[in-house]
Image 1 (cartoon, helix red, strand yellow):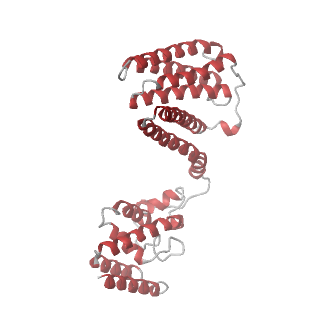
Image 2: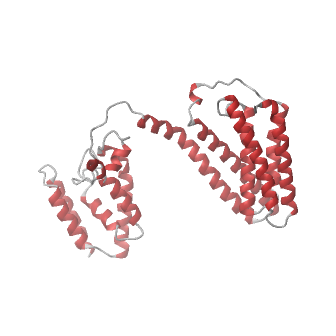
Image 3: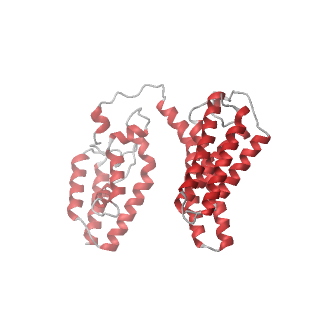
Length: 336
């Protein structure tokens, strides 16, 4: 049974393998496969102990400072190894070995063994990736700090570029961990809803919103006008804006988008209101493109007008549609 009582065995083997890997890396003028094998072996040995301790405690070893230091040692070794494989810095394995060894020795001198229970908030299975992502990001940022200091002392710009890349990766993982803190519980609550959802057939979910209430003239949707539709359709003809226009049109007209964003409860368009700034920004870019390039698609504008007249024959919205189409026609004629 793997527990804190036999931690010293795994710690000694891991440290020896890390030291051997660091020595081979320093002695080799190029990337050493032997150093990679030894360092990987040390990481695997420590990973086996973490897995065994997990089984023994019947919970993820993430609660105490001693358990947290295990993960720091583990991820610091991984971060150093990945940096060595990618950028071939011979000294990086020495630094990662030093830091990992320090954490391991602290645990050897003062192992913090606690009970097997966790508070209810920490018993969720989602707690595991949330915390481990944090720890990995800290390890990557630690490597970035070491490389940046080395670059400052050696006055080599290459080190600073490497540090930048590691910072980007570390911040990305840190952002994922921070976002998961809010998004995962929200997603679980939505997906585990108890209230009855609307009875929707497959065509209502996968089909298109023929009345376009998600985008146009609806107080219960985005409530935009035909000019926005015209510009989004116009964006399909510009390679630079095509991807964004396709995505916004899909969200606006596909029932599946509203259904998923509503947590599969119903397919109401009110959930699309937060997309208004994105649509307006896209339209502003396309208007500027029209002004700069002087290229206009009158046929597309006429197609848009005809669609509006056919699809919106309600007396309540017709005055707004007529005014909107008049402005659109004026813009096309003046631009020409």
